[in-house]
Length: 525
Image 1 (cartoon, rainbow, N blue to C red):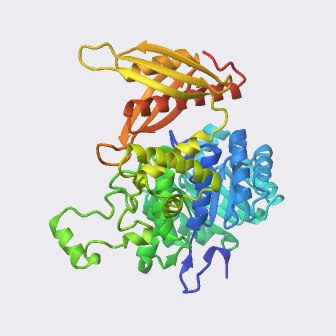
Image 2 (cartoon, rainbow, N blue to C red):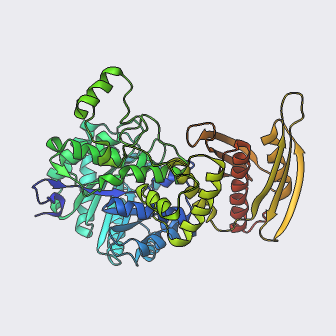
Image 3 (cartoon, helix red, strand yellow):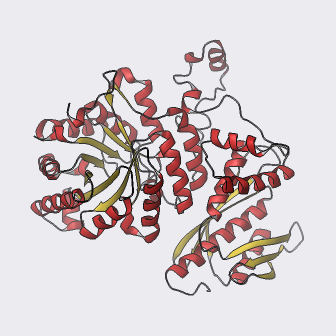
């Protein structure tokens, strides 16, 4: 049987799920992750049972290389891919990053559309084919599993696209991915592209045909599913649809559409669907990008019913208004609430249910923070636990320079808002104290922090939300600072929203200091 037409034991076509949350998803504005966070997501993706994890773009930075390398060392159950342009330095770097993977893959790409050939690469068609073939052959010299993507394929002339696909398969590509790079396509258009290639590429059966769709017109999932019906056997997607601009095809939507409408797609995946919801929550928590309430499959309202008619129907027979069982995607019927009397065993068990696996040292750190929060709150909910874990991974990021020791603020009608902040310099093991006034207590505290750290920054974005319901809910602050023309994000959580804001500001300042040190600049203003 041809590799492009793999079938499962029940006669249905097997669709490979290629997850690019850690590569394309991380390009989503504000979704930057440190290595510890990437490793935790990679473990979750392995439990989800994806076929391939695209762990990053190794040539882009030392951090990206190290993350791909670290993921390659710990993931054993699925392929780990590194992205590379069709250049020697990119491919060599990617090969080095994935060489310790149990199933290494190198994913090379080269733009093929007329607009990219003319304005970006400034190369003729023959040169594009030569670059692509040489890139595939070089990657093949390092690993057996090579994927090639003709970038902007959906806007590439079909005869030329056919030439490129045929040439790269002949060069050794085991998977050829057809990207809708700018989200330009429609389902009918994309179906036509895949069907044309299936008909005109002479060696098409020697490779798996994949698709990678962006959501600029809100059609990424629809286009991906249209490609599956037309013969594609790999779908590239991300958790929660994260990605460049409007995002990528949402993994949970693609997988559950194939599962729920197997009668239409005649296909299946190997995804452990009960891990979809926990993985979605983990990615949302670590990236700080929230899932909209009405998001399909994993949104807060996805299995909620408010209308009386709907409620009566669901109570009488669930399938009257629910086409999927919430438990099939890992949504529990009830939430376990932990309190100050709960022990480590109960906490570890709940973490595992949330898709979070920690070692003993990490569990001890989370347990300590959990007990402190439980003393301040009567009940600790799932969202509180996820927030603690997320904070743990953020604090694991190297080169933390400053730590909040104490905070006092004063505000109100007829009072000049003031703040007194004490920070500890971790480099000097020394305390610093300052006080300032401002437009409000938060503004005053931010002024203090900038004076204490010597870092001048402009607040560009500030977002506050309640992690859980209730008057004792934790507040989570996500903010964005601009320092010397570069953007840094910070996040903080506390039952006190002013403290949460200050923790987020200190987190962002630490990132700014670390960034300047990496660039060889003085960390001070």
